[in-house]
Length: 150
Image (cartoon, rainbow, N blue to C red):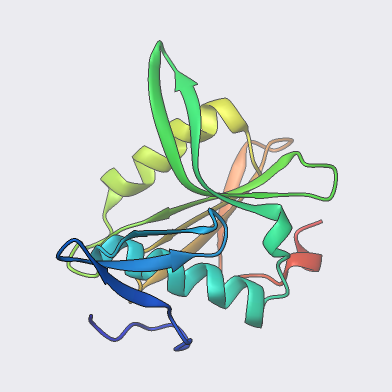
């Protein structure tokens, strides 16, 4: 798999029925190793090991209902009261992050109304903070530490 702009980690990769699988510590199972999954596993490892996010407050593949359709958020981060705090959307490193990716995560946020959105293709990472009081948003220079999320 392609090197990413994220710290390396000891990924647990196996071969099963002719397909590479990677262990997802949040779902506690092996999942198919796609380029997007490679990014997801690196990113959650980065959040846990570098940014002090608790593994217990992260969840992958969270289903939401949006306008009578079912969608899945790649990762949702919760606060200590288990209210959604952040949505993270991953793309393959081959996918350029464009407006359509932000439109997708913003649609998900119609349901969850979180203050933080992150989009990453493993090479570029964008973190946005939404201020609902002033109805504005701002892009942050870096991914905040968990305790900075408020």
